[in-house]
Image (cartoon, rainbow, N blue to C red; front, side, top):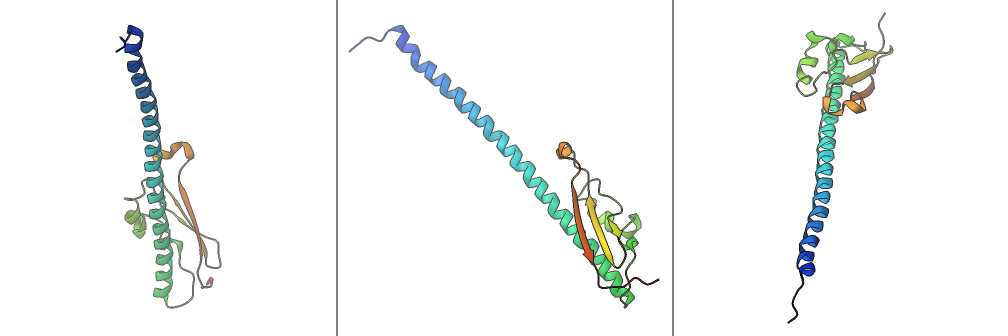
Length: 141
């Protein structure tokens, strides 16, 4: 049986340390990917909530038109402003939600802009969701 020299005895320890270094670099990459995946999932969740908030604003406009029992365009104040209740309902899910999401363009066409503040994605700018709806009403002078 051959006798191992001192150089040969330390070689397996060096291999193990290099393998540990490569493994730790790989695990750091996996941790970075996990962080990006969590950020993406959170952004998708907030976009889903923004979509629901925009649909709710549209339904409030439709409901106001139905209450009038005529095809006249509803006022933007049905959704806009703190007294309308829309902001209170959705601001718990979207921090920094704007108070006036509905902007009318005449002829029953409305832009619904949902914008909120999100600190996690500050480098990308404030998130926003734009939605345009046209109701089948007419503008009453």
